[in-house]
Length: 190
Image 1 (cartoon, helix red, strand yellow):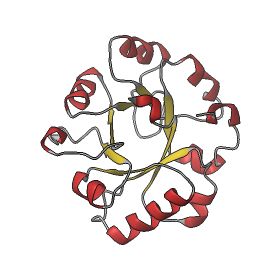
Image 2 (image 1 turned 90 degrees about the horizontal axis):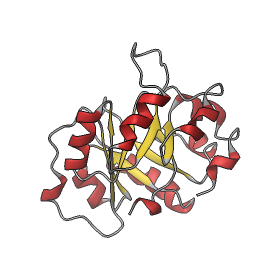
Image 3 (image 1 turned 180 degrees about the vertical axis):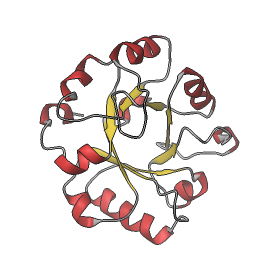
């Protein structure tokens, strides 16, 4: 099931062609913008760009739009604890992924039908005082059936530590945007 999902994910909140062109083609895009209402025109521009470059595109928190616009899947953020995806029929090759911060939230994501869960923050970040670490992350991953993606605080100093995490990939925002994924070519093999 998760074998067909990408290893690296990048979060965006608008259509910026220059930004998207710096991102490696093997990286999937997750569109999330909680400040504005969903603009189908923007989503279609991102979808068109991603389809042209054979990248997967996910939208955050909007199952109906994801189905209507024939996107690759849905991303369910950690704060969404009520969305029941089992009530909807989903097309073939449609993936549901989500994020969590602890074991309880991972269970919620499993119940929501997520095939992958982004567990964060792995490393120290400015926005949050607490973070998991390699040991806690690996301990949590031992007992979970759903594959995990590392998220949060990934940078040049701790990139090599991803190899010792029990995860199937990683995701980022600022560091990937800054580097355009040129620094870790060996991790891009899908």
